[in-house]
Image (cartoon, rainbow, N blue to C red; front, top):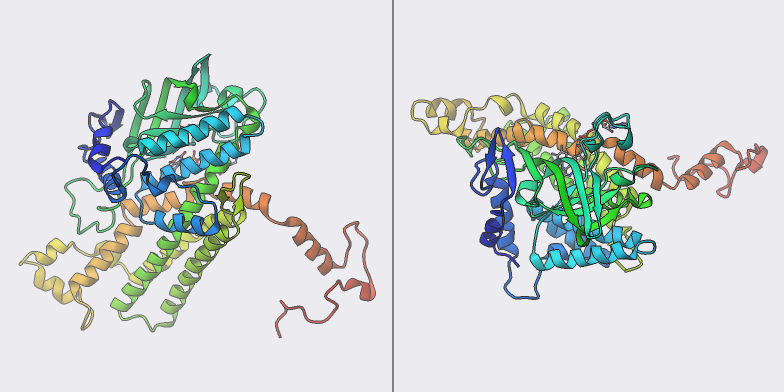
Amino acid sequence: MLTGDQYLESLRDGRRVFINGHSVPDVTTEPLLRGPALAAKLGYDRHYRPGDDVHGPYFFIPTSVDELRETQRQQLHWDFPTISTAAALLMVLTAASRMRAQHPQYAERALAYFERSKRRDIRVVQGITDAKGNRALSPGKQDDPDLYVRIVDRAPDGVVIRGAKLHISSAAVAHDIMVMPTKRMKAGEEDWSVAAAVPVNAPGVRIINASFAPRPDLDPDFYPYSSRHVMTEGLIVFDDVFVPNERLFLAGELEHSATFVHSLGLWERLGSVGSYVRLADTLVGLAHLVAEANGLLRVAHIKDKIAEMIVYATLIRAAFEAAMTHATFTPEGWASPDELFTNAAKYHAAANFSTMVRNLHDIAGGSVLTAPSLRDLHNPETAADLRKYMRTMEGVDAGYRMRLFHAIRDFTADAYGGWKHVTVIQAGGGLYAQKVVVTNHFDMEAAKALARETAGVTASGEVLSGLHRFGPHGYGHGADEGA
Ligand SMILES: Cc1cc2nc3c(=O)[nH]c(=O)nc-3n(C[C@H](O)[C@H](O)[C@H](O)COP(=O)(O)OP(=O)(O)OC[C@H]3O[C@@H](n4cnc5c(N)ncnc54)[C@H](O)[C@@H]3O)c2cc1C
């Protein structure tokens, strides 16, 4: 395994990285990127154990519901590149399992890649989302064929790829990019049907980054959350990058163009839902603390808003648990979360997030945005004013209350909060993506049977009359009809 310092050293590998109008010679010292690098370093140090045959828990394949639950529980304490690695590698194994019958050579490569990554203790990010150009047109119909990553040359020992993957979380501080098609490809789009693990420092790879990271001169007390939790996303250009065969998992096989993204969607969304359990509970906790600090805990409409937030948080937790309890198993015995519950949970968490933040802001009041900084509380010229006017009652002094407002602003209404708002909706695919999956996995036949029983019709369209109308449950009150 790598230590944190060895990890930082491994990032000085000639990678071509840009941010804010300049190139970055060393991501570990660039002010806007060192936060993600240091978070990953801490993760390496936390997991490090000496020895040749040890590996991190993120290279673990769950084979039971309990193991699945335990890995998800552990993930809540991991840095993002480590979470991403676990999802990318479980994805590659899930995809290998689904492809094994038709393409055993890809399944073997995928397994070998999993083992190599484990030995090297690398971090892998997920390169799915293409530039996509005109969304109404498929990859082969775009006016520029590079708008989806594609194969531009083939040789006996590998392929050359060109294109870009956008929004890729933590790419600048990882080692490999797991490239895969963003959607199912059609006949004639074989060249766009490509999946591969590409090193971040491969010749031809360039990463142009964005980050909400607070600018380095800002006060960490004013940003109590985002000064500790920083992310970066990269637009990764693949400028004729050679991919050797051992890193190539799909090269034109249309029937499996969507296998990777479906497999990843499952693991990525389950991980997101696990983090949303915590996110939703945090929103409830902030709402409660600020209501308490403002003396509003007993007010009816405040209690009602907090109750609504509790229902939101509890349903995410329930569906997360159900997704793991109803896991399915591959022929190899590997556990996979249930698709219906995972996607329904992701949709519920994302679709209602802004309403929950609205409740929090409504409860908290305008000081979410206007509370002066703690530095003003420490300035002798302004300290007394703030102590007097920002306190509310005995036990709630200005410093405590101002800190709550800073946390709410930082978490939900400032650069990080804005990032989170969009990320909850888009990362892992927009709301529509989850609706497609739930529709495909819902037991529609059972629902239709209930509907027919309710209507008194049969599957062949016959209308039942009289007592025949009542199905196996007879007539009278159903269990769902109340007293
Ligand atoms: C912070 C953040 C981190 C991310 N991290 C990663 C990552 O690590 N790896 C990765 O691969 N991606 C990542 N993403 C990308 C994310 O998966 C995409 O943003 C998402 O899938 C939407 O794609 P898009 O941004 O291109 O928007 P668009 O595709 O333009 O979608 C916008 C809207 O248009 C709709 N739409 C688009 N095309 C069609 C169509 N043909 N028919 C009908 N409706 C359509 C969508 O459903 C959506 O509602 C990240 C995104 C964010 C915000």
